[in-house]
Length: 249
Image (cartoon, rainbow, N blue to C red; front, top):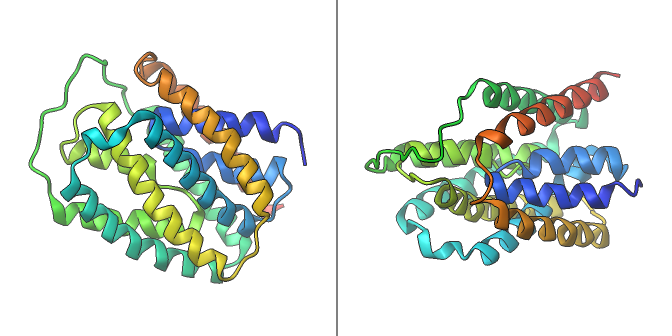
């Protein structure tokens, strides 16, 4: 196990707090490459790390003041269903296949972020009427992805919430963090029935990443998103290439 695991876990927390996304996409490679953890165990551990860090970010940012409960309930119920189904599938498929899917996911998300134009902070999104059918469908899909790959799904939740009318980035991040916890706990509980994880190591990473989440929460309103998006995208692209190479070699 590399000593770099701990400072990098701190960085994972910062990423999750800043974007409301990216925790699982960075935690799984972190555990595999710096913790020498097998793929399935890394995915199972990642779910609990992401849930724990998201909870820390929620408490620190006091997000309950800005939540839309009907939207959360719609996403929450559908996400729980998808997460349980995805975790059941993730337990059955091979580690090689999971690695390949994970690397593909990282590459797709990184390319999307590089092509996506970051809007100026002063631009406000026009409020929309929530489409609950769309929200339920997205909730199931993100839940399945969470269960199979150990990611919280915030990278899809954030743009989906914006499309549904959650207009400001800090508010979008708040909703994403709550939904990530629901999906991750359900999927993590399903994995716990089939895969043993290093509880002490998991708790340690949660603590390190939670400290990062507190730091990220302080930076959320200070750093323009356009200065963060490209760096995050290139990091995901690099991780995706490393995971792809690992799965075929």
